[in-house]
Amino acid sequence: MMRATDTVDARCCVLAGACGLTPREFDVLRLLARGRSRARIGSELGIAEDTVKTHVKHIYRKTGAASKQHLLDRLEAVPQTLSA
Image 1 (spheres, rainbow, N blue to C red):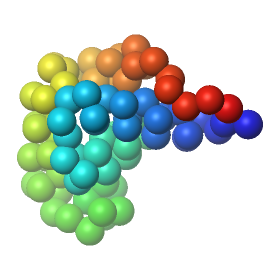
Image 2: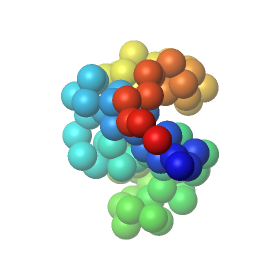
Image 3: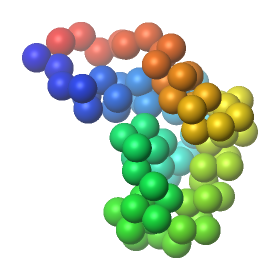
């Protein structure tokens, strides 16, 4: 049985691949999709909050998202590619 976090990871993986995100941008995307703040993302990944901010800007640019909500909407629209 697939958990909700597995679905989020799968959708993030598909979007990251389609948009050419770097591995670190993918890490940030996964945490953003789980509702983590920039400060918490920095703490979890061991990077400065300003670095997180830069990664988020790159994610928005590469995915064409204008805001966090727009990014989350894009993730919801990604077809699920993993089967249960």
